[in-house]
Image (cartoon, rainbow, N blue to C red; front, side, top):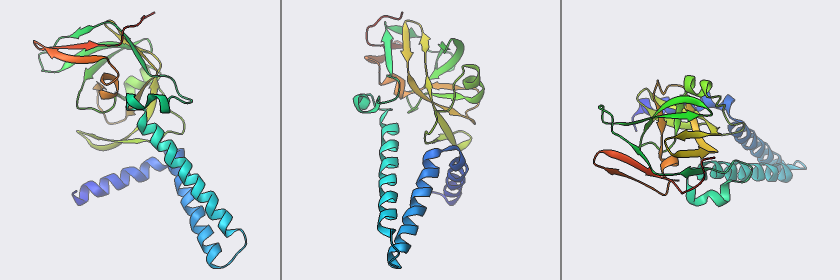
Length: 218
C-alpha cells in the first residue's frame, strides 16, 4: 500500500473516533488495561481486577464488531438478528432492463420516498448519499462502528443504518442494513447484501432478473 493511502486511511480512522461509541470504548478499554498492567508491576491492589475488566470489555467489543459484520452475510442471520430487525426480502420476479450507460438503474421507494439506485454487484453494501438518506429519514445506527469504503473520491467512512422499508417492482425488503456515505456523490447503490438475500438473480438478454423468496408484499 502506498504511503499516501496509509496516511489517508489513518486520518479517516482518527476522524471517525468521535462518531463511534465502539471505538471510544476500545480506546478506553486499552487505556484501562495499560493502567492495570502498571498497577500490577507496582504491586498496587486491584491491578489484576482492572486488567480483567479491560479484557472483558475488549472481548465484548470484539463480539459486537463480529455481529455487525456478520449481518452482511445471510448465512449468519440466525446469529445476528438479536436486538435488530429481521432482514427480509419477499415478492415475485422483477426484471430490470439495462440502461444506455450499461448499468442497471431502478426507482425504489425507500421508507416511502422515491429514490434512484444503481444495482452494483461489485458493491458489498447498499449505500446512500447523505442527501438521499436525509430525504428518506435514514439515520446512523447508535453505537455502530463506521465502515470504511473505497470510492472514486478516496477512502471515506460511512455510518451504518437500517432501511425500514424498500420496495420496487414486485419486490419488498424490510430491516435491510445499509450505509450512509458522505462522499458518495449523487449515486445510491443497491449492493450484494441485498442481492445475496434473494432466491436468485441472473442476466438474460441484457436484462437483470431478480427472484426473491415468494411472499406477500402486503
